[in-house]
Image 1 (cartoon, rainbow, N blue to C red):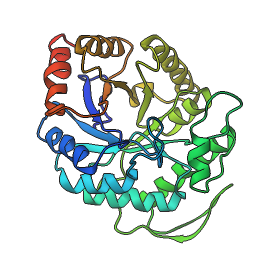
Image 2 (image 1 turned 90 degrees about the horizontal axis):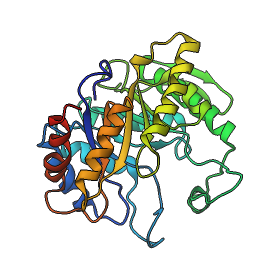
Image 3 (image 1 turned 180 degrees about the vertical axis):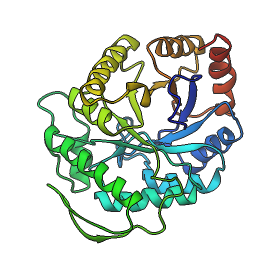
Image 4 (image 1 turned 90 degrees about the vertical axis):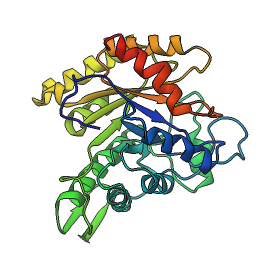
Length: 303
């Protein structure tokens, strides 16, 4: 997705959450979307166990699946919305992402988030997932510090021939990453999140900022978070217009008018990129349904 014109025409992506679905069901949507220029990009998520439904249900690993889909598509920008920073070491993640950028011939958008952290109260699905895979849950502060370190390592892997790194969590010696990414300087960096400290990291490093929209968060709440991001940009002397504002929403098959209204409200709140998440099971011609019932009508309204 272009990152140099955040105030241009509203752009659209599609998200297929690989939970309780087969590879063929997901591939069908991606191959169809790849033929529809109204859809700019396609996304997966990054979890190892279901977050809803039967706990023993199918979940395909995100980056492995993304590589397979990259090889079966030719046009769509693609990525994970978002990669959990806690599931892979930073340099290993950099190598994986570079490989997908090569396979896709330069179509990767590097979606990245803190990942699971310890929370003081309320349900936390990361607890069971991380315990099942032997991963410790960090504090929120540690998670943010690890995210910043990972961004530094990714940038260096994508721009330097060889380097050492001495960080608070990672020590690297003689790190090389050949072949490098197809995109000069590496894939654009999308950071997902909404907390004040996360938005500071977005202001410092991101090309794209993504946040969950309806039904999880209202356009008004997103607009308030965007003002916080703007303030962080002002504090460091960065033009906030350099960061594309992106939101994801869950599509309502039974009420496309409601989904269109949500998209229009997001556009009015400053969002310039909307990811349309498809609920399962996917109907036939799901991608074309998105174009005909959501994308085209919204654009005809002038969003």
